[in-house]
Amino acid sequence: MAKRPLFLGSDIYRTSRYASDHPLAIPRVSTTIDLCRAMGWLSDDAYRDTPMATPEQLVRFHDPAYVAALMRAEAEQRVDEETARRHDIGRRGNPLFPDMFRRPATGAGATLLAARLLLEGTATVYSPAGGTHHGRPDRASGFCFLNDPVLGILALLDGGVGRVLYVDLDAHHGDGVEAAFAGDPRVLTVSVHEEGRWPFTGRVGDRAGGSARNLPVPAGFNDRELAHLVDAALLPLGRAFAPEVLVLQCGADALADDPLSRLELSNGALWAAVAALSGLAPRRLVLGGGGYNPWSVARCWAGVWATLDGRDPAVPPTPAAEALLRSLTWTRAAGRNPPERWFTTLADPPRDGPLRDAVRQVAAAALAPG
Figure: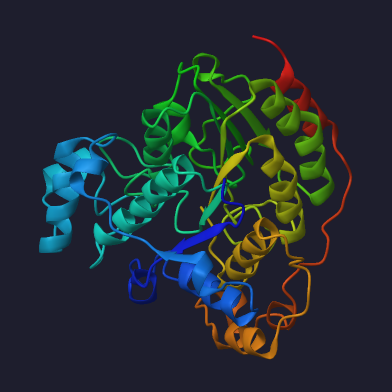
């Protein structure tokens, strides 16, 4: 089995943007790639350019009528009222924009390529463009037009993998993935997410027919509390399930500097979780996800790659990396006067705090039978 991890990316993320007023109208994947290169962490032999998934590949999970509607909406840059209502295209945070099919189809193509590479013997594949965990078979949801984690897991199962563990560290519940595999004993989905945040699902008692565990956490969730959930719940659940492949979603929106959650993690806590969870399976597919601050996303996801590649991400940025970070802009209020540490450090300051009873109880409930 190939030991060196592979990094999947595409130039489409350099030119494609969601609508200008959308939370995803920021550079994320392209900046992560550039930051890794500026740090000397990403060589050409570790990088793979990714294809766009075909409609035939997408209908393994998605409704053919929805795929056709998405392609038509991109071509025409408009959508009629019935299509918008049926598929949530052009509304509910799922905007019309020039690459609205090609961009998510490229992210899905990356995850499908990653699945093939794992089946062929690669041990670890990283695709920060993936992790669009809200997409439904026949509609867009939560900024996600397609559900690449579901497509990737289905490809692994179709390729003969018997057990897949999906762990979701995004601030938002991985509802689309959970629903896709409800009652399927081959897949265990585990989601750590902010309690009471959209999509308002993933309660601690929700088990999806036995194939899911949910760990909703309170606002202010800190580094110590994530470490506790990893040790007291995620690792025991994973070891008991004994997966052949781990699929790990690393949304950066649980970080303290992100505007769309009330969680308080440092990127170091997420890197430590990635390192700890990676040992649960001999093969790993690591994805991106949410994240709406260009500096915190790029620094976090670059550090995830460093962690997977056996490097210490908590090092000072090179001059080229600092110049890259200083070149970023962000229209939100925090971006008009960004703190100096967003330019001069890759690692956030630790966000330690108390281990609250609510978090202890969530960990215990995840392990409870039933």
